[in-house]
Amino acid sequence: MQLLYASPSFGFGHTLRIALEGEGIHAFCSDADNAVAGLGGPMAGLQTRVYVATDDYARAVDVLERMLSEDVADAEAERVPPEAATQQQVPMWGVIVVVAVAIAAVGAILEH
Image (cartoon, rainbow, N blue to C red; front, side, top):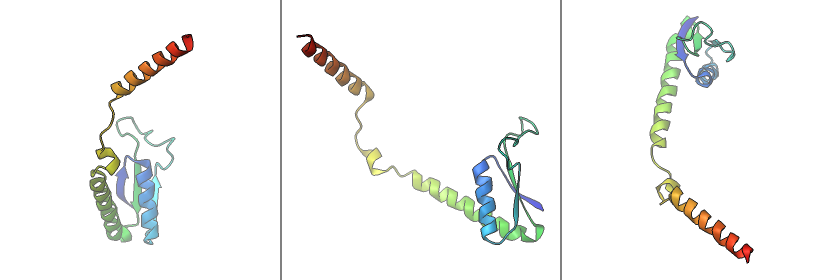
């Protein structure tokens, strides 16, 4: 077995393993238990290491590169603001003033 990738993301490590197995490449995750990941030392941090057979290493690198390029494409697509985010939003201080005036008005009405 040869180390393919060490990911600080527990989820990405397992997603990579599943993608590799979907391509017919046997993969193994070490430190797969989130409760014991990173017990080697606090400087190492939490890491999920993905290992593959040496024979499948070149194919596994291709799968990893595709996954990483898809992550970059997804991140670039997320940079485009959705239509709702481009609309004018009411400032929070305006909402607080309107609510305070409404509470004072209701209090004055109920007092009489």
